[in-house]
Image (cartoon, rainbow, N blue to C red; front, side, top):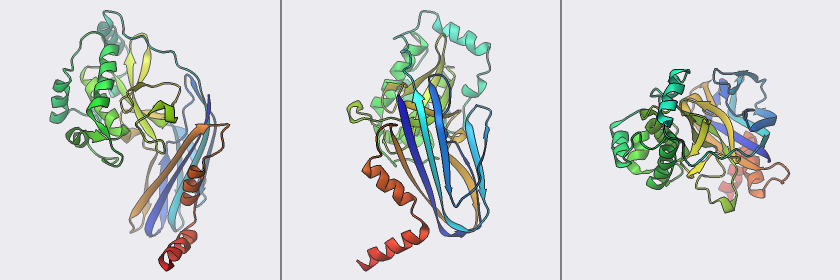
Length: 315
């Protein structure tokens, strides 16, 4: 399956700023059954981006805009090929917990076992673990399948109910959140059982017939857990899925703090406002009219926005 992704991010500043320095993690990975065939990065104001691979193998683009500006638009376009994944078994053989322990002892997985910025044990998390009767039983795959479903059933998916820097206790207390919260909760629970887990940022290809709960015009996040004989297996607690051909991997880390799509600073006394548009579709299909309108709006130059605002006031 060939998919195209258009991910537009727009920062608006309440007053002109003197400089922006930004790093991006938006280029899909080429790894396993996924290949990134094409990646184009458009920047307004124009800038030259350099790229490198971080210590986890993620593609990072970095740029600096030194001139005065009132907005920054980042337009990332990708074409990827994603192949079917082999379905894992329903369960692992007896003794799999011991095999997992031996695998961990023989490898370097400590970063994915230790508490991290957003995925750490709290009193509220421990209460939730007791509610789930979370413990080492059966085999690791069975426990993770049940955990995936339990988190899906325990929480409502409510966009904008949390923010990018919300601690897990916020979603746990309200029993609602977004994919980032579901993922951090599952990572923290699985690590408490000494299962190495990592955070995956990326996209999910939606179709009406799939009945996905996550938003189709946004980025997505899920969990990858290390299992003996299987390697890294993806679990999507937001949609109660195992990660498959529709899941497009962009970056992996300990949690969201390692892999935000954008991270940067600017020089100036101004407030910033963020807008994002994401479209994932089969590469051969035309863009939807709704997506085209939204992307065109985000690419609108400041003077056009000012003119549109004036027209609305006059009306």
